[in-house]
Image 1 (cartoon, one colour):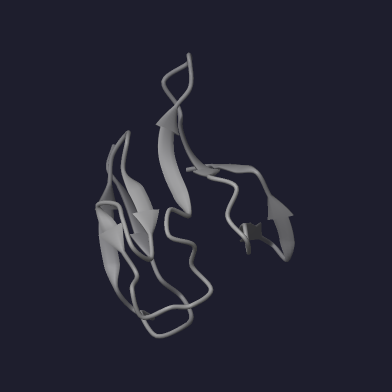
Image 2 (image 1 turned 180 degrees about the vertical axis):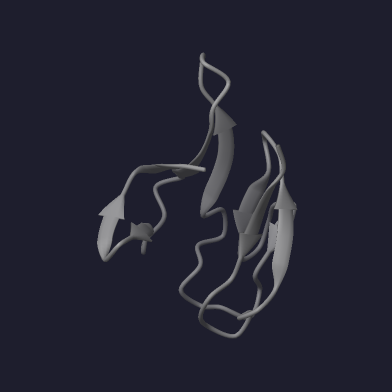
Length: 78
């Protein structure tokens, strides 16, 4: 199964990126860089695999966090 990250708002809206375990997302570093968005931390999130082999998007103590259905979450199952 393949997973893709799609930006749904902000200056990178509409951009789509394939993600795999270990993918880092940030404004200044990572495989996915969203340099035009001031709301994104330098290193914002990382895709990680748990012991059951499921992929999660995990917040890296970013200032604005990850939001899902209007709530801030620490990690999100992909």
